Amino acid sequence: MPIGGDAPIAIQSMLMSHTDDIKNAIQEIKRLEEAGCEIVRVAVPDESAARSIKKIKKEAKVPLIADIHFNHKLALISLDSGVDGLRINPGNIGGPDKVKEVVQAALPRKIPIRIGVNSGSVEEDLLKKFGGPTPEAMVESALRHVRLLEDQNFFEIKISIKSSNVIDTIDSYRLLSQKVNYPLHLGVTEAGTILPGAIKSALGIGILLYEGIGDTIRVSLTAETTQEVRAAYEILAGLGLRKRPGVEIVSCPTCGRLQIDLVSLVTRVEKRLAHIKVPLKVSVLGCIVNGPGEAKEADIGIAGGNGKGVIMRRGEIVKTCREDELEEELMKQVEEFVTGVK
Image (cartoon, rainbow, N blue to C red; front, side, top):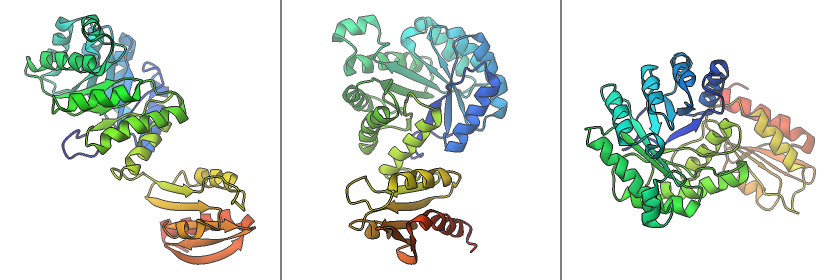
């Protein structure tokens, strides 16, 4: 999985399943792979989890990253289990000597290490120096551990430097990007539930990507993990950096101009089209003001109003029908469009 340079921005998530619950972990990875996730991080809180990686690796198609805290030996066991990468938080792994031991084990295997610094894990001396977990403190923490790895001729490095505060996150990555040329993993940590979490992540990650900063992303949500992947693709698609792996639905905001039951219609259409993995833009619109014009911009579109509507394909009206016929006619048109068979 190429990271950095001209490679596409890679999308990550982290398993909700316990790593030593091998069956459920594999099932969740399969769901993430189906959603388009490209790198999966797994929690490694103990030796059982570290040793479970070996069995999980046999079933996973995407690279697995071991998330290590407090005990450097878990990183060593994870390396023996065949993990594809490590994420360590140098501030809580036991000191420079422990970090060195991990680096010396990763070096001959050519396993990359992500240095992960969060606002809640900055070392005490830096908190005192900068008066708290400021962007400057987090950057200094990251650079301190980058130098530790570089001193051992280790350069397979990624860096993340996250805060739950959007502005601090943006400022930290901006500052860090001026000081290193390593790939940066972006995210707003502990962003929250789906709506606020997606908004905070879109702001923090989106602004940085727009400025050319960042190489991998994770949208951290208190939600089912495939929602993180979906949100990540929405951010990348909105910036024109990646196409969604499937259907993009364009739909009206709800307002007093609506003349059809648009909310329930869009909900059903989105669910019924979820299985399609080829790029397809579908508009579902219920307003006579913007509907017809917007529908022309989609591969297939509905423009409904006053109990009836039109079906459009690439800007051309192909059928007019009653409101209660729109959904099934749309499904028929999508099937024809995707398969080429009428």
